[in-house]
Length: 173
Image 1 (tube, rainbow, N blue to C red):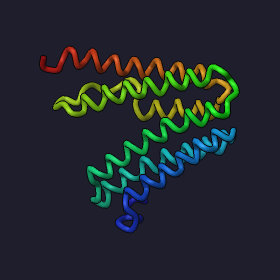
Image 2: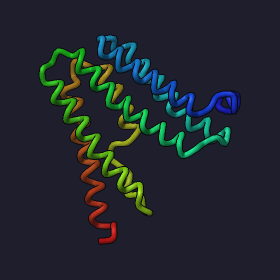
Image 3: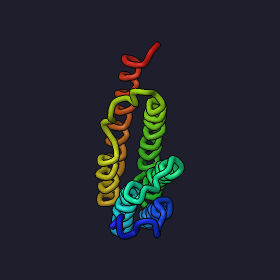
Image 4: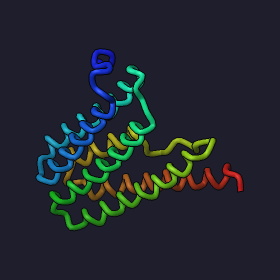
C-alpha cells in the first residue's frame, strides 16, 4: 500500500491524520461512545504505523517527521485517558488517570534522556505493543479503567525504574 501511495501523500499528512483520528477517539470516549472510540483508536494505530512505512518506502523520512510523530502520539496517549475520565462515573477515575499520566511523564523523561546517550539504554517493559493492548482494554472495558489505569501506571513506573537502574550501572559518572 505504501508503494501505491508513494510520493502522492506525505508521511506527515498521515501523521496528522492519525492524530486527528486519535483525538476523535478521545472525544468519542468522553461522550461514552466506547465502541466507536475503540475503532478510532485502532485506526489511529494503523495510521501511526503506516506513516513510518510510507516514509521508508518513499524515501521521504525526516527528523522533523519523526519528531512530529512522537509529539502527536503523546497528545493522543494523554487525551484518551482524559476522555475516559470524563465519561466514567467512578470517582476514583481522575486520581487513577493522574497517576497514569504522571507515570508517562516520568517514563518519557527516562526514555528521552537515555535516547541522547550513545548506548540508548535498555528496551522498556512497557512499550508500543503493550500500550496498544492497554488502551484497547481501557476502551473495551471502561468500567475497569481504575484498575487498568493503576496496573499500567505501575508497569510504566517499573519501566522508568528499570531505566534508572540501568543508567546508574552503565552511564559514566
